[in-house]
Amino acid sequence: MFDLPLMTYVVTMSVTPGPNNLMLAASGVNFGFRRTLPHMLGVSIGHGVQVVLVASLLAWIMVWLEALRVPLVIAGCAYLLWLAWRQARAGEPASRGQARPLGFFGAALFQWVNPKAWMMVLNVAILFLPRGSGWQAAAELAWWCAVVNLPCIALWALAGDRMGVFLKSAVALRAFNWTMAALLGATAAWILIDELVSK
Image 1 (cartoon, one colour):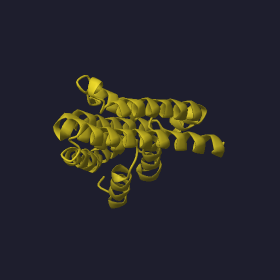
Image 2 (cartoon, rainbow, N blue to C red; image 1 turned 135 degrees about the vertical axis):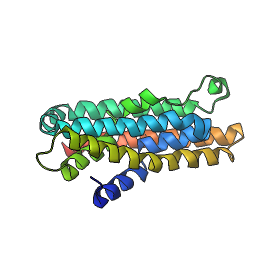
Image 3 (cartoon, rainbow, N blue to C red; image 1 turned 180 degrees about the vertical axis):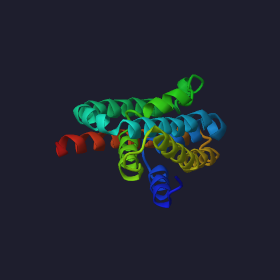
Image 4 (cartoon, rainbow, N blue to C red; image 1 turned 90 degrees about the vertical axis):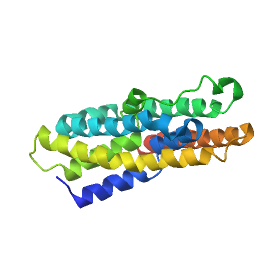
């Protein structure tokens, strides 16, 4: 099912800024590329699982999702705010030894409350799943999405890893972490306001 428009869409959505990519860049800065690998794999595999499930059960999910849209947005934004708080504290000397990168399962589960991930998955399922196809086609679609997603998000973790070389001082690292935390917090606020205003 290699489909150039699908690949173009997945690359565009995967490589542009969003909660996953901000967190990956921050993890790259704070923990390096290698320690960020479980986070990256959690995002890509979590994304693939989300695609196969949503594409397989699209009709039911659309009805269910509409009823749960606002609670999902609120849960996602609350989680983003918690991650922003965690990110802001990542550069503090007292918490530095205790800090750990987001792991595989945490990153995979985050896809279910990430509004950008939902938008991407629903669009992929609606636009690129052949009409009347079964779970095998959904699984193939999910495979391609995960495979294309991984190198795109790896760019963010790698960029963060390279930036970490320049952020050796506690002051510079703290400033970076607070900036990333502010961006995550602003993302959460923007998503929540947009959702409530559009109702």
